[in-house]
Image 1 (tube, one colour):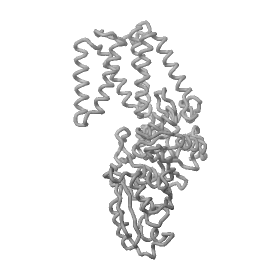
Image 2 (cartoon, helix red, strand yellow):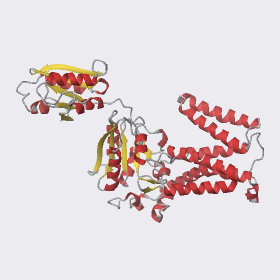
Image 3 (cartoon, rainbow, N blue to C red):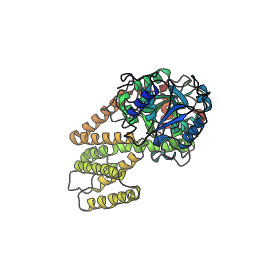
Length: 486
């Protein structure tokens, strides 16, 4: 029930407003909600804040200054009180008590003063935060070692440190009826497509839910609405330099408080295959790294179904590749071996996530050396199955985007099932359907397979080869940048 429903407005008495705020914040029941009642300059005052969010030094200084406040300073407008007695930069006024209460739960403190129609909002919040460490999934040999963190303000500052453009925008929004989650939309105003920015902004505003339990992932599912599609339609990154690079290209980024990942959009299939390491080396070396990475990704996707198709249809194998096949048959059918091995790798991955770091390496050694070796010795698995599955697993781990690697693993399993059920026709048909589905896939009207389809020769060259930066003088056309020249 709102304050107006209970008959409490900005013109109500100090006692009524104090009682309403105490009731809504459940001060008597929440040990971490602080209500500090004071009397200064013959005026009653109350300071509300969340204990874990308040910056002690700032609050102490504010109380010290309030104790020196004179009655002359506390006039009807209270300008002197705000401008000279509250030594803090981020100060606002709010007449709606419900909005003020939401502010307290978000972190700022509110000061209620007798005779004052509005509450004074003082942003003294200081969230518990870890240091900006290098992300585990985006490490580079050379380059910055800082990464985004769970605090929205610090993550935005890490990106702004790299973009000193006066048209760089960080738009604030709250999402969730109950969670009131802070989000920020980042873009460079004179580069990003205004229509796309407006589309993203309105899509976020249209989200109607209690809260965002999974932060940015929940927003992705609401905005892009592709629940049956395994492939990611946004790129996640925890590196501020990667975020800055995409902003200069005309992309739009969404940050969510509580998550260290930035959502980069629009995103294509080829964006997900790029890595910062390629741009930290010489162009020739970067191009070689990119080719190796692309090869590893497609090997992880197609190696197992192609080998299984050839192993079960020897008439398709040329004489020069007669070694393809199984030299030692396992006691279990070949297809079942692959299913068991795939499930085993997935269980190992999940076990490593839930295992402390000190034990994770030992777990990997036990699984790789003991289980795999013994399974071959007892005749349960064919050695070729372990070999090719290991190569495919390495390709999976070489995929820069974790979400893309999971999607490719899922499709690899479908290719295997189709090949086992229908032979070469099943593999060709499933691969064709996969390709057509990706071509038809669009994330907010952006073609997923651009620049391959629709075809753009210059952009496609930049996808497969690491172009020297002086020659990379045009922004991606798919982003429809207002300023296409770099």
